Length: 133
Image 1 (tube, rainbow, N blue to C red):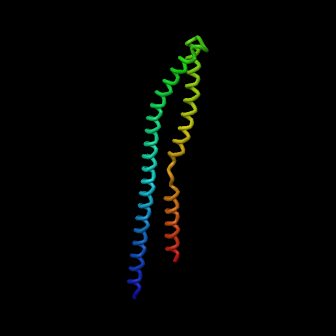
Image 2: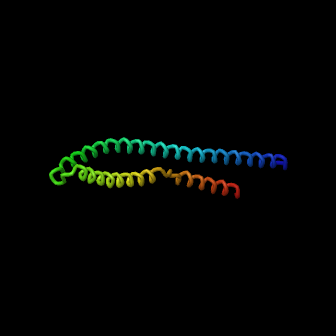
Image 3: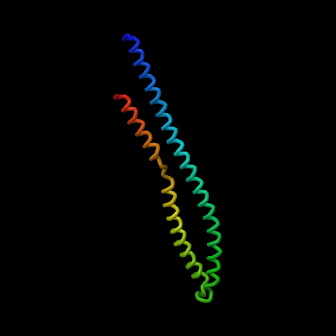
């Protein structure tokens, strides 16, 4: 084997390695993009379910509040005071529910990129190890 053939073989090897690294990088980026899209879709579905459930619960809670206002008539004669008491109950319950849902949505909206990052790190280590041989 002469020097020209050896240089040609090394050049081709370097070209193939560079091409493989490009392909690996492209695949890793695609994996991250898929994970982000999946997380966004899951979060949107969760948010839609929460909104729908909230609307139904609000209607039921409004009817419950109306029943409580009527039931409090023998205890509190003033309709204004009964409505004020129920408005305070609404504010407290609504704040608690909104706070709990905000925490849940915040937790679920963060994509889990640990697998993609681990695979990218391992790939880079393999490439470095392959180049140092």
